[in-house]
Image (cartoon, rainbow, N blue to C red; front, top):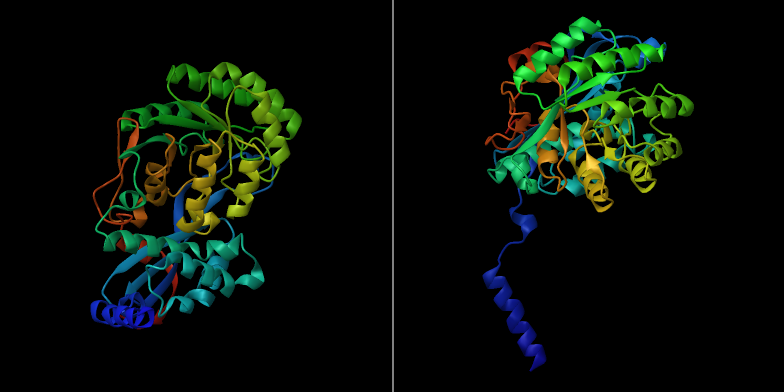
Length: 397
């Protein structure tokens, strides 16, 4: 009886389910990778420039990925690099791009692992994963479009808007009187917080600028960013002097990989510590989070390898009660921040605006998730004009 019953069940399954998921799944047929250089109207300097470690920033390299499938779906993603690295990311992306062809675009984690192994010889962090980011982001963009949802809704949004702060008006190269004008303009535009760069060779100059900005803002949310340029003694001394300003956080007071130093500051100061933007893998963020090295985690999806590892970082951060403030790339991070259980902050940078036909909505101190499917952005003609190299794989559907 049992043998016969099993045989009947198999026959019944064949009748009911004649095809498997593998038989019916979509397939990637075409991949395009592009390298563009976005020029900045004014060279930008932070503390790394004043300490002689870097030159002023004049342009941002953008690596785009466009993916299309047999069933007519498409997705767009991007990674970026400031100063050096753009050509390297593009070169590695070209080397691994054909690994996507023939894959079901819905199997994003599987594809991510495949791309990691394709470049395993050069590691699982840094440029190796930054070259995966455009593909990974494009696949998530496509998946949300297939579901006819904004990406935030595909993840499961906790909110439809995210608190948003501005950085670009407070760089160290900007004279104080212009910083104060920029602060006023940002508030009028609907921004929800202001971040001021610190890290002058003369610490008194930082305190002078911070005092003036706090006076201008009143009790408006204010953050500072030292861009890794203090040693431990300077960081604790400046951190204590800055307690009076009621800051939302002190960002990157120490070298990005100094987990012990950041943990000591986090324990010693009332002002929260934020760091993580320079880390380039899940494992590096894991060390930061498990080491109790910050109050705010600041992962950057293009830098850590895309949305897939960013989601893992989010899960770990939430499990350990950390707050979230993603770095740069608001076009991607708006959706991720909207899906984080603890109220996050989003960094507003208008630099990337010319790359896209659509712009994000800022009002009432928050950035709002649009009703457009996926990321909700498409490449502009200006982005195409700034493109210097392209590579195509597969066939145009």
